[in-house]
Image (tube, one colour):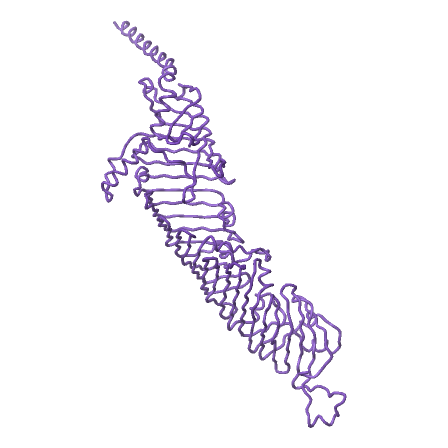
Length: 626
């Protein structure tokens, strides 16, 4: 009896093995005749909503998984037969259910697209996206979800959402192309990743890597309710974008309805803003842009507007706080807001957000005022400490504005050089050319500190005073602005000293005759009671109307011109000694001095050379006022 049962068991097992072998052996034949090509193409079309065609002969593999390998697969729009395919793939690998295949059905959990080409179109907001299908199960599921949301917008019954299984789509070594000027232009290359969506009422994720404009990029997107999101409802969304020039992340809630919005926490960082602007081809000249930028903020975005609240921003590791508002109108986008910093490099900030700051080490560079035609800007800034080149400022209140061809940067209040500073830099684009205006008012400042910051070390009044500068004129480069400007400069200083001037040695050299360098008599300091300067500027040449320095024993005056372009000097001057009368003239008797005291003595001279290397040429001693 036991032996009989054993024999029967062996026969049963053998029969099962034979059946299994027959099934495995006949499965490719069954699949190739009942499923592949037409059935898979139909199923893919039913899901995607595109017309799917398979040109190549299919191949069935049973081990290690049952799958179909398809070649020359295209997905096209049903409504436009002449349009190029939306997706083309050299090969598609589809993992199939063996039992479903035996029943004549197609059930697949994974599809792999090898070397696909995806055609995208530029949307109104500037993004490149593929064409949207007019039908298909996914589109119908989105319509069903939209109906659920409309039935009860406040508290929709999400249990009524379609629960059809979807699966995973993988893609390897793909690319995105767009038709520009009638030619296919590659937008993205080396596209690899996968989209996972187990069921339509479950969560979904997308991970992809590729090369965009020569840089490797990585994108990760996930949502717990993707069908709700596609239907225009509010759903959780996380997004991460990583590339060498910049990284960005978002974690919050989003809606893709007609009134689309985003609400959540966003982070952005770029090690070099200049590199980022060049990489993105934003159309904004980066100038001497900030090295690093990082932003972390609460973001609320609606159609045409993005608000950044509780914004933490760091420019070259200088942290600040504030709020920003981006508005996208029909003409130009508007950036407005308020930012407060502990420390701030004003030149770097301006070169990052406006074209106003010159590029370091390249003063002849052209100023890109076309910036004012592409964006409107209104930023209010404050900083406890700030720098503008070599100038140190404190308690800064400033404003940067760009609007309708006008670019302005104002420092309305700042402490510097021991006093107060106000300045304005203005570019106004007009049909006849760009007009530039520069204003500076420095009140109650230390003249020595001001002269050092301005690069002037000789004959600078050391004391408290006021300096005013106004320049106006056309200009396209930084040099041409100063070479063509008209305006005025004035300065008044109280008691103090005149730096780097040994006046006794200066007078001795003038008495000896022959020209000498001003550096030869710079080993001293002259105490003064006050100093005053007034000059008019025309086409980059300053004409000194009045330049006087008064001390207890001397009065020094200068007049003439100084050129900005050539840095040349052509000045005449004199040193008057009121308490020392001039010697009598040859035709004047000595005894007449009692009735007519002679005028004070004066040593006259000529100043030539350049700003950095002036020389003095004495003029014969004369009478003051001659």
